[in-house]
Structures are given as structure tokens and as C-alpha cells.
Length: 141
Image 1 (cartoon, rainbow, N blue to C red):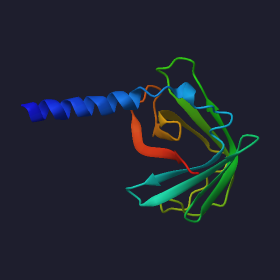
Image 2: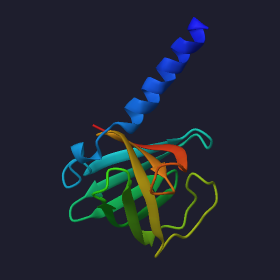
Image 3: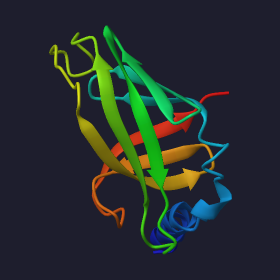
Image 4: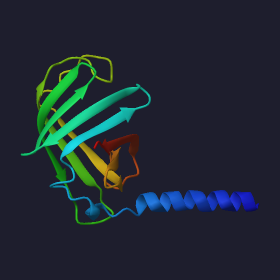
């Protein structure tokens, strides 16, 4: 019984610490610039995103290369996640992590960011962080 309570307390602490990170600690104008990666354990593939001023992004994964514009939209409500928006303007139409050549030219990608720390955010498909993908943006040094 004591073991179960200990495990429950530890799990509760982990959940609370994950949800307790204050997204306002991330200065989107300066902290988001740079290189971020996403590692997909299912496909064993790493995606790389290079964010530069003025709001430009270069994406690469395997043979795939894309570029375009990006924005991070912050909602003032702390319960609503930030939104990562990427408008693809160029795509080399090669295969990326999904293994199939795909053309994302003119695609508009929208995902929510559930901040775990100032350098890690889980990607989600909803604004409340209940439908997350198990994929994480991780800032590279």
C-alpha cells in the first residue's frame, strides 16, 4: 500500500510539474529563434527546424527540405496553448520522415505547443493540450 501511494505521489508530482510551467517564461521574440529538432521514435527520424528573423523557417528531414514563414501565436489565457503556424512556400518534394515523397508547397501547418520548459514543447492538435502527439520540439544549443 505504501508503495502504491509513493508511486501515485511521484506520478502526480510529474504531471503537476509538467502542467505548471508558465509559458510566459518563454520570450517568443528571442528564445524561439535558432534550431529546434523533433525526434520521432516510431519512424526513428529527426526533423530539424531553423527559425530566423524575420519569421523565416527552414525545415529538413532525411532528403526533405522546405522553407517558408512561421509565427507563434500566444493566447493570454494560461490554459490555452500557444500555436505554432508554418506556411510552406518551397518544398523539394523529396521523402521525409513519412518515407513518401510529398509536396507541401502552400501548406499551412498549425500545431499547439504545450511548454514543458523554456527549451521543450510537446506538439498537440488541440488548444487545451489533451490531444498531444508525443513529439517534442527541443531547442538545440
